[in-house]
Image 1 (cartoon, helix red, strand yellow):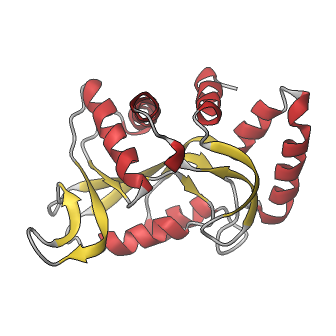
Image 2 (cartoon, rainbow, N blue to C red):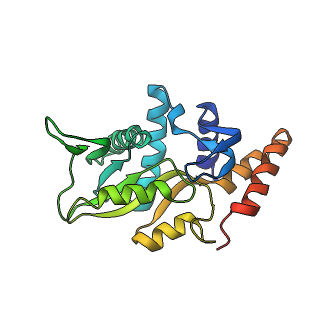
Image 3 (cartoon, rainbow, N blue to C red):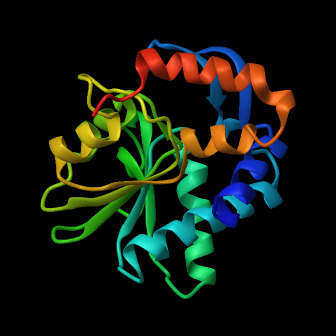
Length: 218
């Protein structure tokens, strides 16, 4: 396993973002582990997370200019942290996020921050993909912006689960919308990391059993 992947998984655990137990995902699936970006609560942790996103961004897109979009609510802090980390590394790009409810006073509208103009490209910053539900919701929101397109999506963890078919949710999103989805780590990286300690045997077994049913088949 690459060193940065181990460091990232260790970070997720130490920050309380990666937890094991019985949870329900946004897709409605009952899952044996949970990635909760809402557990990022300190300046140091959000700065560290932003650095990991920035590393992934530079690795996949280089210094390509784009506008970062963070879906409310968790995506707001994720996009801001990524924008700050990118700027510290020489790429100063704007960001924006959506309101859950359209504001009908003041400046109004559904978006806060920089509003992309025709011809610009958007990069979505999310936490995880399970069945692809959240990304599809974001695409519906972004469809109200004329003349812009999504260049990529970056997430913390690819759960490697099937979406609306036996294909992986990430693959379905890529095929449906025509942009790549990149993850810092995936569930199999987490399994590999956990298997290094025999004390994690129960969690490893539960995750593998879950993937045998819900894992992508293609």
